[in-house]
Image (cartoon, rainbow, N blue to C red):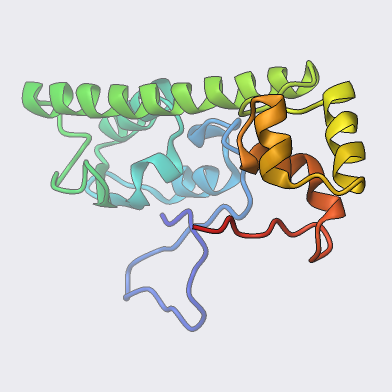
Length: 190
């Protein structure tokens, strides 16, 4: 079974069946996907289910164990071509070493995905509250307007930065649309 797109002109070897789920959401467990239903109809004991990378098929620890249990119950070997579990001849093997290694590696993969989801959720919450990544501008509101007015009167960027206790870069940011180059910030001189 291959979950990723198939290269144009690709033909599987004789006796090899290729199943593909295009644009399948990770919210659907592997065993509930349309291509897996086709696999279930064709699989026989002694067959091998080969996936390009396990986390392309299974998105969490429970899903990996469900696929592994499915393979064990039907006598189907589970093989992964790339990723941390690619060195195993059969991930569905019923020995203690394989079980422990699969549990550790898949738990680490699940932890990484959970952390990524938490990060995405945190960014969405920050955006909803009107704050998103990075510091607020050093010059905003009335201070920004004061800097802009003084710049229009001919005050230099360096003098404005000193007067307001900010860097020249912060001053340039407040003045970006007023500077030559249509909003492109000039490079500071060395």
